[in-house]
Length: 114
Length: 116
Image (cartoon, rainbow over all chains, first blue to last red; front, side, top):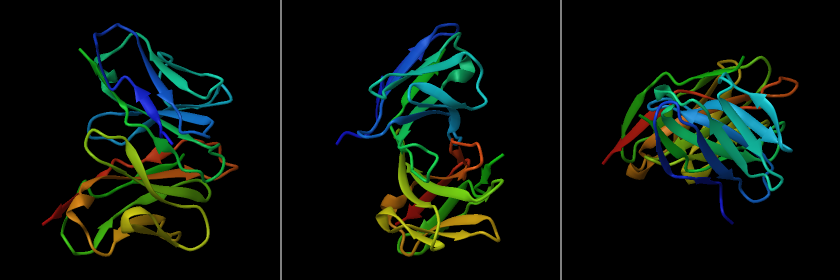
């Protein structure tokens, strides 16, 4: 059983560009959350998707957007990249988080903005 | 709002000795509490969680954690540390319904180093 997978592993972009990161959830999971982990910090919640809708959003600007597909996979899009967007982007999947269900994390995508 | 504090950036312990990684939390109601571990250049791996019931929770790789409601703490423990336990540990919290939070809020992490 494959766990959470993310692509690409690494990405280098320049300021002002746009980027799309992809995530496939663990089998049987229908809820996908995205987190940003800056160097030396804990993950920060970006948003969560369930039934193809964004159901909660953290304190991130509208440059950050996402999508969930019918097969539960998800994309994170970041427009107008800033140097400060350089981070490890983590995708986590779970059963609905209204219960005490733990989230399972992918290996992350390391984004570097030059 | 929910928050987590990990007061120690770094914890060093000798192999074979017991280890404790500290975590305190703040939520509006009752919490769901989690511990995750992160190895270099890897995602987070789930260790254990507290939902309800027994205050002592057992998890993966011999780790356990004790929920203390009066002290709003959820410290991670292991009776005998291994060198391979060296990694970055994160405590996380989520408020229970009817709180609106669906996301995990993480602490800043504690780097555990087990010395041979």
